[in-house]
Image (cartoon, rainbow over all chains, first blue to last red; front, side, top):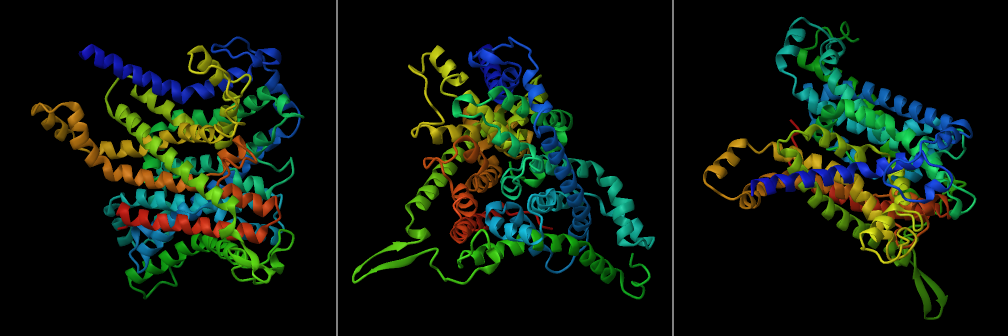
Length: 274
Length: 312
């Protein structure tokens, strides 16, 4: 009976593993296949052909698209963290009227449907002359990264003991210095987690990137992948699409394997969107 | 920083002023990128704004929502969003999608969370593996599944045929009967991990000794699950459900990439985006986005009440 249970449990574990990993595994498999090999389903690696990668990286705008994604996500995270850590200090450490309302507002904005601001944001982007620029994306991504960063950093900062700050207050150190000298050194693990989660969100974003940018050299990687197509539905270059997908996804998977514990902690603290 | 200027103020007053200074930039940015655009979007819904010239919009009242178009005499018809069958189709699609995916994700998420809550040698590996679908960009997930679900060369049809579950290949993405199932499948694959992690956090809050006590009393594990685990994890599960529902209601990427231009799967967000930027119906699309916003705002308020958040 006990053995049966253990076997059942591990079967379940195997099923979960298979379900989680198989699609990506299959994408990797396909990305190494060309010609007719692509069109025969196989479950184990049969070929190792880098032609798809050469095609995706060697011609067209895809390398540029990746750089765009990196730049946009990095700038978004930097701005969010900078604004977020000071705001979180104020929200977590200083009592003032309207604080709860402010926290609720921030939480509500983080749950905001991005589509609800799309037409208004489009007007701003056009008025500022930012259409087709990466700046339009950095600006619009702050809608979801900033509230999220503030919220998660506030929950982390609340947990830091009062005594640490009291000593600094007694010494007459200004709030700005308290943030930079006392909290920042303590907060860096939380900032890494939050920054990483915000980075992933910005890296994966599609709606704004699709709407505010329409030329090949300014696109981000997800939009570029969505738009890879052949001359007809029958000629969809699946090998190239899978190679591009693997390129965009692998860095994220590596980050996740490294920061697994922190990511789980940050996700549950923020109740962040998926 | 304001050390010198702050002389003569009490400590509390100084700290309050610092708080205001610290919050101002963040609030200003949020007002510019979220508050103002939201108000403008709502305003556009009441105008005749066009994509080429949103600034030149004129107020037209509720005509984008509902208007009686008279053909003279007693003849005429209702036009506008509330009389638009395509819009209601999109609403229906979104609600079906949300209901089915969130239900399935809750059940599967609970199973995965229970597994991850047990102690076994490979736990770290499984937890890392479970995070993979969550981290993969939605566009990439949609493409990966589009390939696996391909009617001619897809591996899902191959598996189905080999196992005898399918008698002939199915055009999962293209055919009207299965397009929505395909979209749901991708979302369930992608979002179950997130659900599992939120539920797992709830499970881990349950003290060990409750299980010990149940074990000593000889209560069987199934009963323990229904009587102890589930009730105690319920608040965490509820929060996770609302969170996922909010996300599912605004689904865009999966539908747009997996099944473009398909009435069977068009959701509210896709309807809005298409009207705004493809059909040159800027005002009409803005009106639709306002309705979507109202739905989600309503649920968010419910979430905030239910979750009893720690704001102190």
